[in-house]
Amino acid sequence: MKRALVPAVALVLIVATATPASAYPAPGRVTGDVGVHDPSAVKRPDGSYLVAHTGNDIALKTSTDRIAFRNAGSVFPGGASWTSAYTGGGRNLWAPDLSYRNGQYYLYYSASTFGSNRSAIFLATSPSGNSGTWTHRGLVVETRTSDNFNAIDPDLVVDDQGRWWLSFGSFWSGIKMIALNPSTGLRSDSTIRSVAGRNGGAIEAPNIVKRGNYYYLFVSFDLCCRGAASTYRVMVGRSTSVTGPYVDRNGVALTSGGGTEVLAGQGSVHGTGHQDVLADNDGDVLIYHYYADNGTSLLGINLLAIDSAGWPYVH
Image (cartoon, rainbow, N blue to C red; front, top):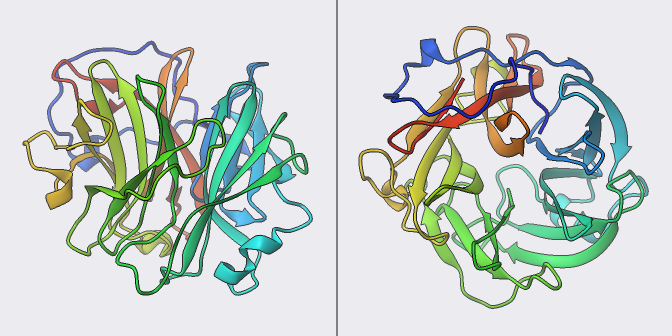
């Protein structure tokens, strides 16, 4: 993902304890077009980076070095009419999840309006990832106001058995998971699993990765979208099974409000969240957005490692 360049360092294993917010590293250096919200990124076969983020028709950015970024248009420059029933006719589409598999790019993204759970997650694919090359593949999951969960903030994970799973969710009853058909990328059955929640409290933006023996579920706690007053922070739990149960460092289940803090705001860095983990040549990279003092939403990047007890930390 896009990443503020921190010195290139290999993945390190050290003994780490819970880190006070004042000790978190600053976002690494990035330049150019770095105004983003809800970023997701992949490393392309040519070694460059493609970033998708919330914006009209889903915004795109590219970088050759993970430092300098430039705008690269949008996924749907002609608009996405199939989303209008969920957006009230607006073109702002949210929280894309970008991945590269089987020689093509997959993009799961959300259509909704602020505070509503009349929402939907759709899939698009592209052979190149470039603006205007994306094909609408269909509706994956939707929610109505009568539901107790919210179909936004999708994240695709493929488990060790090659099964595809989509986690998603925001507020309401928390983070959910559904199975996907790998041949289509669309939903395969009607089962909905719960993997994290805060009894209706602020939790969203799941991201699941497998490292070593564990699947790690990263989520964002507290509030985004309030500029410098945002309180977003990155939390994590782990499980030996992709479907959970996920627990934090103290053994508290994420379905019972548990979560171990990985990154929080400090100083002039506010509301760090909507994280995505990218495996790169120099180790894992945590990509996220944060807010500056003037309320601008910016790209944040730090290296991410796993300590000797098996818990992630930024450095």
